Image 1 (cartoon, helix red, strand yellow):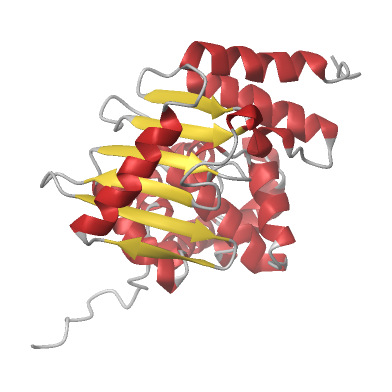
Image 2 (cartoon, helix red, strand yellow):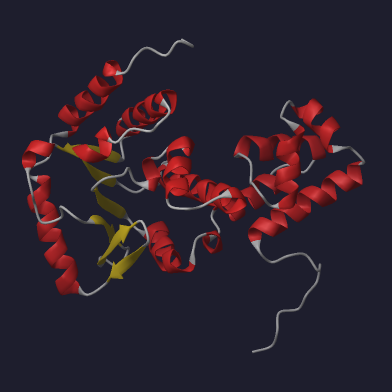
Length: 280
């Protein structure tokens, strides 16, 4: 196969290409990072990190830069490509990430921690830091995790059912305000029409998935695959017999869970139990 012809000499990696474009546009405009921050209303250090590829920023920042540089839609499109780039995830997760993006429905069960699709930035940061990530790698993995949540947004978002063990809900963040924000975030997501959130109460006792965080992805072909995960890795199961066995365990466990309405009441009750935020 002939090698791809290099035309621009720019990076073919989405995250780096986004950073390169930001550097090129600012250099052409002759504006400093500090002046850019003052003009757009964000801390200038954010733009510096974006130009180094250390962070992607938010879509709102990309849109503001598009307006500033007169490149309508260009930077936002590059931002979307960078945010959806599977190479930012560790190698062992990439196949799962690809299948997740293709799935027409997702079912999930959490044993002791909230799933990435439901985490706030502070929750993701504390959880990933507890697993040993630090510095730039931690920042990138938090950002990558939050970027996955775009999967649940928009009119074409797939149906997502998650069952959270009560233990996952009772394991709070160290910072009380961050934990309040996480519970409020859960409650808000549970109101989305494509999301069904249930809680498995502790009184339900042991069941077939007591030690297993699991995802079921139904693919466009009608086939279902299963992914189990823990803090140090995960495993993708595509064998029909194995998937069927885990689905039966999931169905039996789901029969023990609270209804979506009861689950929402539990989350809101936990919010009310927290001391009032003094900043409010």
